[in-house]
Length: 202
Image (cartoon, rainbow, N blue to C red; front, side, top):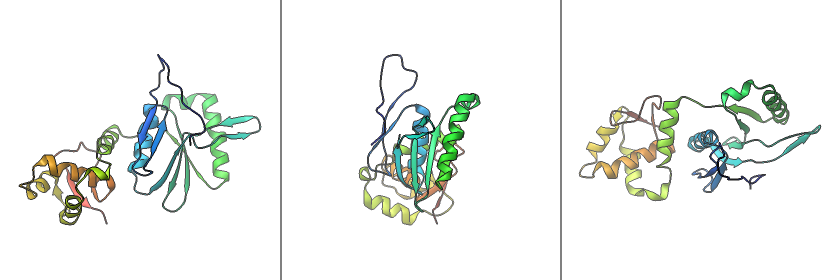
């Protein structure tokens, strides 16, 4: 459970909410759209096996801090993430607080990450793919056959043509689901479309 509850009120500057995570199978809270972006990236990362929001309170020498996320990877490594807009990282109070917290986390052998955003095209693609993250919504036989039949260098449009008489409205969501779950890979630095080249994961 999150350490603290979020408040919603008229006129607030940040958009808080909950996001259903394919990694955890549960809803995870976020306090801002920037936090949501980092949360979606964590959910997209196949090495991430655990996600917790507002995971704990740190108190030491009269200082207090609640990080935004705690991530656990397949090797058991813990990464504590603080999300802050880039312009706020220049504020002395913010910089000192994050430095103090990061030193504490690293002293435990954890990774400490300060995240302010990423490539907007790649982020847009991952947000789009997140719409196809729920495995239960896809025909398992189609997903399995696609994973076996796709050849490295195929374009999305090539795969759709190969699957006819299925319509793209059936096949494309399955392709996008495989891109989400990591069975297929593509260059996400360019907008996704029918010309996107995919490869099978090793």
